[in-house]
Amino acid sequence: MFTKAVQEKWRNAGTFQALAAGLDFALTANTLGTFFRLDKGSARWRKIDRVNLDLSRWNEGPDGDREHRERLGWDLGSITVMPGNPSRWFFTDWYSVWRTSDSGATWTAVNEGMAQTVVHALAGDLANPARLLVGLADNGPFLSTDGGESFSLLRNGIFCRSKLFVQAPSAPEVFFSIGGLPGEQGLYRSLDGGVSWSNVPCDGLPFADHRHPSYSLAVDHQNERHLFAGVAGPVAPGKGGVYESRDSGASWAWAGDGLPLDDAFFCPEIWNANRELAVSREGSMVCVSYTRGGVFHRDSKTRLWKPADIDYTFRRWSVAPWDVAADPFSNNRFVLGIQNAGVFVSEDGGRRWHLVLGGSAGCIAFDPQTKGRLAASLGDEGVALSNDGGNTWSKLDAALPTKHIKNVLAFVGDRLMVGTPASGVFWIEVPKP
Image (spheres, rainbow, N blue to C red):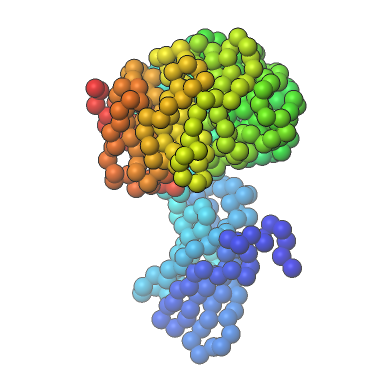
């Protein structure tokens, strides 16, 4: 009987999806990384016992990580026997490429300089258009100071997974990051542009409970100490909904009046690269729900959430609000990407919305340096650019290797950066209008 940890279909002792052959033998392995060999003339497979694991060329450093040691071979997908050298084999799994030169006794990680990079977050820098923060699943956050030409791994006080980075417009040296998996939640603050980080206590925010993770965060444009967070789980004070902090995240109070109570609203997992909460320059707010559907607005004076006037039900099935962003050059303007419906714009603080680009849309990014310039991920159609605030759009180079509404976007000078859920980060030059 398998334990709960190995009953999932993509990793268990009874699932085999890789096969290879040498001159006089065949190899297979299950999706837990256990290898078996069938020699010529034999009718019985024999298990190959691993004796040693060499992580000296692991992409995170020579010590590797206990998690990766324990997950060696998970979801193993391919095996290759090197022609002319029957003792040298390679295999691929969730995290890496592995090599053996002694027929499976010792395996060496050979992913130094490469990795499958699932990008959760991109953030440019209002104070320096050459800087870029990238949040990756598993591998941690990275910083570029040369417009994406090179990156360095950040390991100064921050947890390895970052769902999003948010910069404070009133104090550009201040960044916040929120992320982790349920049960590993954390809010982090940087006072030096993302170079070093410290954990924020977050008294009153229920995401310490694994049932209430928080993956959306917004900062008041006028006050870097004034934050808003979207917490997953059934909406109720002390549970899911919107919370507000006026001391840089040290303490939080409920701010979800008007949202549908006892209904799961905010997305409960890290793998959707979307922001479901945004605050405008004037202080009006919008929140959207990918999980249940729905768009709500909150006036800064009434402090009450109300359903927005928006119609996207005429579109195809599986319609879902995905990512909302506030226009940095407008007091009350928001842009929203909706899966299988398109790009919508509100000019009045989120009360009323109109369609500006049909099809399917996901992540949205404004250029904080150039008024009117923004971009949207369109799924299979790649990425679209607008230079007039979203009234007209042009589709960019279709050669982007991974096209998905999950592609996160950021402007770095005149480069548009695209972070993909599988292939890393790409950029394209975007001329000024």
